[in-house]
Image (cartoon, rainbow, N blue to C red; front, side, top):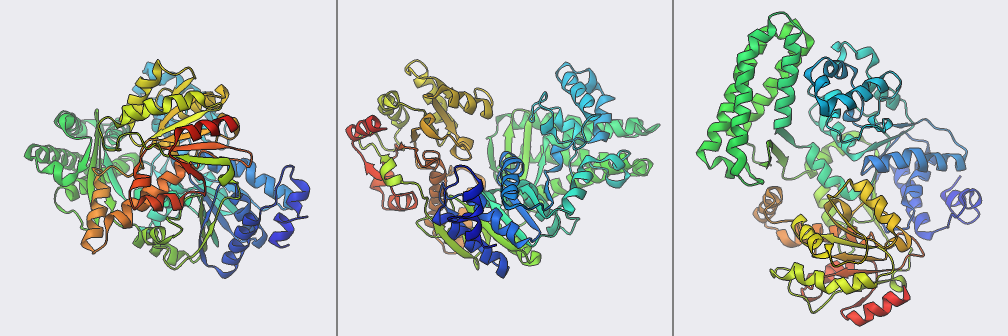
Length: 635
């Protein structure tokens, strides 16, 4: 059965799926993916909103019958693909391959850690006791152990950290609950899948394990499909990194105390050293209370007292390691704590004296929380090595990969230089259904009056809009200032990121029909609001990354050292892809109409602005407010 027989005119989708529309771009994409699978090649494909890329990659993978991993950007998309899209496609095609869903281990209940939590002080903590009791009751009913099943406890509730495992604290085959291990059950099911649905975090966690020569979580696949592939560089960078956080330190201390308490005389052997680590952590919290939220390790250690406190933490862990060493053989739990202590000690030693030139070492600091990162400056090398070793056909697709009609930036960043590329425009009629408005009478984006001025400028536009409005910001400070400005001035319902869960804010915004949502960061992508519920998207500035970001600065320096132009080679492409994501919220269906307001004049006044315009769908443009009001009347 050919792709046309399935997705074309007179095909089974047109016959069996209500509302299905045959799209030439979908057929082109599906054909190219089929060809890539047959040739065991690599394809990078940008498919504009409305292409129907999910069906376009599922159908060829199913037709060829090869062992396939489909990786999505988020757990929500992963579940949508597994529970909705895949069953629909398989039912239409009349096929029944084995499909499986696999998440990261932090999503699955750990019986051993639940037992430990129930027999600890945690069970008497008023903030944790109730959700802990709910989890305990659920643990006797669940066969899968996926925390998403338990609706009575939020997925981000603190309690889950104590009843799920990490690679560091898992006891493996020597765990008392190993025969009932829910993570192992999920992985065993995944191994026999014809089609396995994962998310990028799990995929790259597995890749990073393979890089180090450890066991693999995912089965060897013949086809690997990465949806929302624009997220690959950021997520891959995270998983080819290493980190040390105060949470890791505290978890280790909690586990060491618990495991030592199970063995006669063991806690007495480590109690003094255990207290020294706790004291060293408290001292670091105090020492770091006045430093920047984020900076390079080099900058941090320029201050002698910061170095001294990190040295004291290293010594405290060294003492704890020495105390654990002679008793580590008395239980698997104590052995695990000893190994973890040694690992943290090695990393602290690296931070203090053995940094490697191909990595950027940096930190994040919050109230009683710190984390040190070791991040690769370039991820193309580990990605290339993994791809060459894997031998699978690779399909990478998203609505936002190309910059000024070119994939060169993405190929260089990921190492997929030898891949084929395909650029498909959206089938939606942007030219007639959407308008870009760039106000010419607002201050420059770097002017201190800019934020106030644009809020005043768009207020009448927002009030005139008949449907909902997204106002997207490049910083949380600007968002918060706008929230204060609009609070008493808007006649419409106002929804502000941070004032409730993301899921609830979106649900309330959709229900309102004509609300205004102020968002930053996570609201720029992955948000789908179709129809009149969203008819205007406002973007405050061109989304260039903050120049103080230590990882960005390290990558800029590397490009300059190699003779490149960091602005045109890195900063500009990143900003263009981010703008495409934000603008992509506007038109989500064939009948959608809307106005995109970009308040940053640089898109029209700077030479590089043309690259932003060329990268967006073809829309009418104006800098006249009266034309915008005319368009509102038509919408």
